[in-house]
Image (cartoon, rainbow, N blue to C red):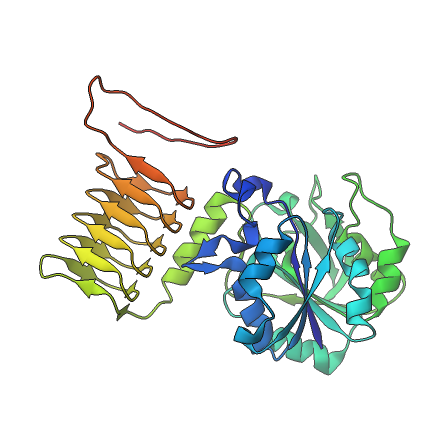
Length: 355
């Protein structure tokens, strides 16, 4: 059985961060989101993986390499533009051949992995197996309608949903999907929708098996979901302190401090991960925060946030919360009069100031 990971999206909902970084490489608990999907496939003994890439293909290739770190083989499949999930399936046909395959959206996270779903699919061999979860806002997702335990209809982002069962971003297909993907027409947003292709399977009388997912699932395409995924994963960590913590500091709870990190006269309250060679000085790092490598937090407070590598937070008078801070960012208070704010911000940036 092969794997197909989709990693070609633009990441428009995470701009401006994704102007300069593939959305699938934005880290959750200091690990790129994409890596969780590859790990899930490897854990399910899927060893031959194709990764569909777009404009950010060079960055994806540099991060993933040949897959050997996960004991898998990776093949890169270039997509000229985001033309829909069914289009990604079609351009991958030569890689997949006649084998069944798992399609995994590269910005999705499933906390319990996919191994039991893959085992069930291999055992029963339907034309497709879809994973579903109940959501409060089904109009934002592909939605499945069931009758007597079978899928009877799929609708992409329905205005009036007839179900609260959303498709999770993991699908399992037999070779029948290629004929169905060729049979459909582009949607109103000019994409070949995977929901339409699966509906075609149903209309042809093929077996499409639903499976309700237990536990959490996150599509990390938005800031709130990224922070929530970070919170959920940090809460699973085991305490590990490989860096240095001085006698004037307190480290409490589930905290990971990587080699070379320094905690000086500070309070770190988990769940938290502090990356290699980071420096936390006269600071407070609160729960559900991920600090990546070479970050400096000095005389400042931060919690429920993600800070990417090589950034500096210094001498801030108010606590930073609910934030995603990119690479090589400088946020600091300067003791210069008159008092004023000074910004250099890219397109689609957002700054929240509270007092």
